[in-house]
Length: 149
Length: 171
Image 1: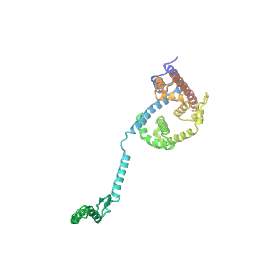
Image 2: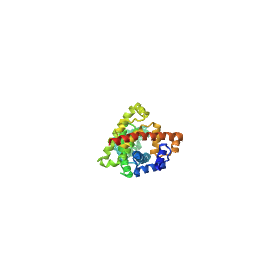
Image 3: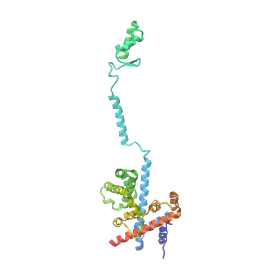
Image 4: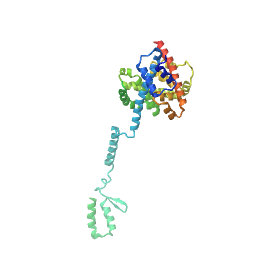
C-alpha cells in the first residue's frame, strides 16, 4: 500500500515537491518511528534541516556585519588613534622652534619684505623711510621700542 | 545548544575565525567560505559541543585545517574536475567511507555532484527556494531545474545508501 509519505518521497526524488511539502517530509522523518526501509533517510533529511537552519542564521549574521561596516561607530581603537593624532599635533606646536623666542625681545617687523628683530637696524630703516627726520627720531625710537618690547 | 545559543557563539567567534582564515587563505572569499563551513560543522556537532572545554581553540583549529585544505584543493583543481565528473554506479571514495560523521559524509557526497546539480540542490533543499524562483535566478528552464534536481537527489540517495549500509554492516 502506498502511503502519503511514499507519494511525497517519490515526488521529492523527481524534483516535483514544493518547499512546503519538503518541510512536511523533514518533519515526518524527525518525529516518527520509521520502518527499516525508511531509516536511511533520517540522517539525510536531518542534515538538510540542520544545514538550512544554520545557513539562515549565518547569512543573517554575515549580512548584518556587512551592512554595519559603513555605519560603524567609532570604537575604542578609533578614539585611541584620534587621541594619538591630537597629541602629536599639540606636541608639534609646543616643541617646534619658537621663532619669536629666538629674537631678542620676542617681536619683529617687516621692512621692504625683510623680517627684522634688531631695534637698531629697524630704526635705521625707519629713519631712512622718514627721510632722516632727526627731530622726530626720538619719537620714532620710542615707538619702535614700545613695539619691540 | 539551541539556535539562539548557536547564534550567540557564532557572533562572538566569527571575527577571530575570519582573521585566521584570511591569514592562511589570503583572500576574503575563501575565508568566508571556510568560516561558514566551520560554523555549519559546529551546528551539526552541537550535541557533542559541551565536551570541548575551549570552544574557540577548537573552532580555530578547524579553521586552520579547512583553510589549509582549501589551499591544497586550489593546487589540485585537475583532480577535482575528475572527481566531479566521475560516473561510476557503485563508486564511493575512501575518504567518505572512512568518515565517522554522517553529516560530513552527506556534505562530501553533495560536494561530488556536478556543479550545476550541486547549486540547484543547495538552492532548493538548503536555501529554501521554490523551483520557479530558481528558474528566475539562474535563467535555467523549469524543466531543466527539475531534471537536475531530481538527478542530484537520486545520486545523493544512491551514494548515501552505500555509505549507510556499509556503516550499518560495520556496527
